[in-house]
Image (cartoon, rainbow, N blue to C red):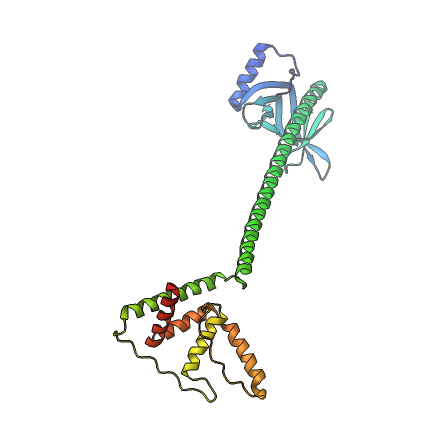
Length: 320
């Protein structure tokens, strides 16, 4: 609300209306005249000499309320120059009354001083400006507090949402860990990771294809020639030992049937070779993964005899 103010000089309704019409020719947003001072002059303070220098502005001063921003303005209709003086009253506006001057600082233009011919008018205008400045400062502080409150509420909401999302993610992770632990407890071994599950699926599909191919081929169907086994190394395993080694891989991976034939026991190495052989066997067992078994099955699928044996074993267990 605009501060209540009576004109600094006694104006009739007709005179006030005339002044308002004149002011609107210079500023169409003027909607009310709050105060008038009959004669003022504008001075500028020289910061080097600390003396007042008169500027080419002199005339009647008006304090007006406007319909647009800024809401309050001081206007001097200049009688000695072409340019009128306009001083906007915004939040943070400060001034000092030192009769017969009202001194204020405007931007980078230094200290200005409005000299009043009538010191009583100067006091009345200063009181009005003080009331306007206090009203604007209070409104600005209230708006700033409201903005700070909204920002704090948004930050609190964001923190609450982040904490909720973190709790949800932790709950999902805990549930997944619980399922994994249950699976490990039920199977007696660690639950397979995503890559192992995919490889195990490949193994199942390969075995199904091998069984189906052997069943469709029948006894009289031609079989692809078996790949020639590589020559055995000195002291190495024979081709039959290779089959047994593959079955050992399946057993170590937990995939061999309970009634699958156990591999033949290889001859024990001499004591001097026992430690290296044990380390080699341990490393081989650690390298056995479903992916490695799947690759081995793809190679062995070319062997017709092996495929037939796999098909027979699958059919036997499927009909059991």
